[in-house]
Length: 268
Image (tube, rainbow, N blue to C red; front, side):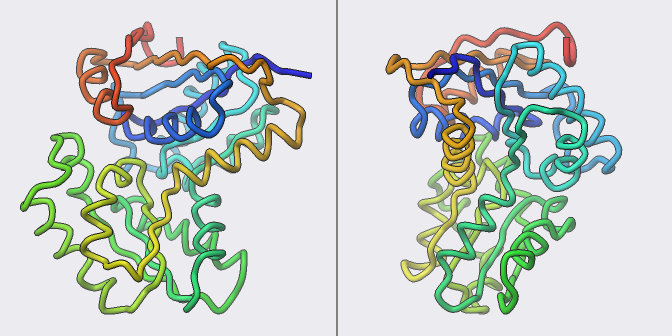
């Protein structure tokens, strides 16, 4: 049995391309349809109701491509709209928060876990809630790092400025003696080298993009939905605005050039 239908992935912009990249590595035969809502980014400054409405529209767009699984690659949408999406649609829907939380709970040795993310994600307490559901006795320390997203999008991945900002943001977490750190934003894996350097070798970094790709594979295997063709999967990319800018930044996230097809307005 093989299911050639694509996996759908949506994000508020380009950050979810780290998820698309990991899915492509872990599930190389799967086709991917990616939608970046670049006309309405960022989601982190908007209300729960607005983010949920945008998320529903994004899923409706992906459903038009007959997807068999949807990954919500946006941390804000995962924290604010995921449960509503699961109630509204029959297709399996996976967010990025719970896979990252599960991985951190497995990896920690001292039960002291750090979380970094955008201001909205940290304010939601989504990772703390997800980890608390798994097992009590964990100490969670959070830090918002709002400048990390523009730093990544500027391409300043390994500069003195980046190291200085990372040192300021992460100073408090270092003082908490954490042994595991969740990268709670899909932009942050591109700063993994700098973050790892600042935190030290004793701290394990949890890449939520990689963890969600592994869980997607598990869901498809368990449901008999894997594409077992053995041929490389194809990837299609759609945005709601500014395809040239998306193409430029996508090369940084995917380490290759893509052809981007502009969506004719949101969810159309």
